[in-house]
Length: 344
Image 1 (cartoon, rainbow, N blue to C red):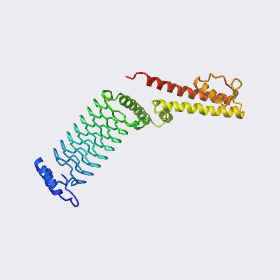
Image 2 (cartoon, helix red, strand yellow):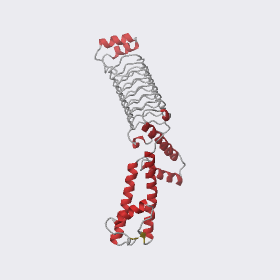
Image 3 (cartoon, helix red, strand yellow):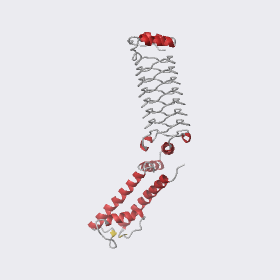
Image 4 (cartoon, rainbow, N blue to C red):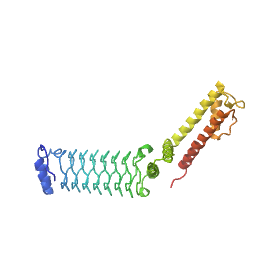
């Protein structure tokens, strides 16, 4: 254990001595100093052996527990916000409702730990081992779980919104009722996730995670292309695809289709009422609704309407609407078919 620097908190020497002793010495210390929950706050306990110690309700905010031994320790309701726990051994530890917001737990061992309803929001959990851990109801919002081991983990009702699961192992994880936010929250956070097909309890999450892995992989492959016109074109097309949630949002595609049809309807209105002469409306009712009718028919029938172009500007206008209609309607039908059809 590194030597403490600066003024020591009351009871710290006795606490450190008790920690270095047997478990019974620590229990005796707790009975002698009942109000010592904050004695270790921001203290240096790196490489300390706290295995099987009762630290329930202790304030360990900002404490340095680098590579500390905390296996089977009782840390229920403990406050460990912004603590340094890189490489620490927390296997089989009890962390029920513990607060670990912004805590660094890189490569820490939390195998079979009880993290029920623990707050790990914003925590750095890169490479951490959660195999067999219970994370029921845990808050993992914006946590970095890159390359973490989540095999056989219980994530029932856990919140993983905006958490990064890139290259994480999730084989056999129970994700029943897991909260993972919307599709935008998943963007860029599921690249290379491993074992997603063996996850159970939430088929929608499995499908969305698999889709996001593909999208993130595609984005990474475009980013890795050498600088060229082809790369720029691919990036533009990818960003345009992103406007539709990469083809997964029926509402957004429908809204874009309605917007485009209305926009062209307004252009046709100006043409008809201001006499621009781009289109021939002689075979139509020529009411206030006619331009929007023309736009909708042109958009949905790919140009086979009863209004014809009178000049090159009208032809360009119709062609542009047909091309956009072909693209958006194709995408819309694809999403509808994908939504209605049974997904395996």
